[in-house]
Amino acid sequence: MAEAGQRLIRELFAAYCAEPSEMSERFARRTPDEPMPRIVGDYLAGMTDRFARQEHGRLFPRGGPV
Image (cartoon, rainbow, N blue to C red; front, top):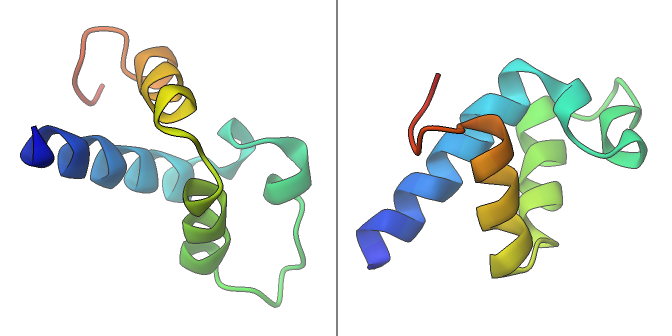
């Protein structure tokens, strides 16, 4: 179970770093002075488990990275 959760977070992190527009507009438009990994990390840290699973399902409809 822990490995599945780690995989989910790693995949979300990579997807949001590659395509910041997939995050909420509030995070996607943060200052360009902040490094993208920091912005994505903050976004992920604020997610509930349920929302993270929903987002993963939206970004990876077949259960894995596209």
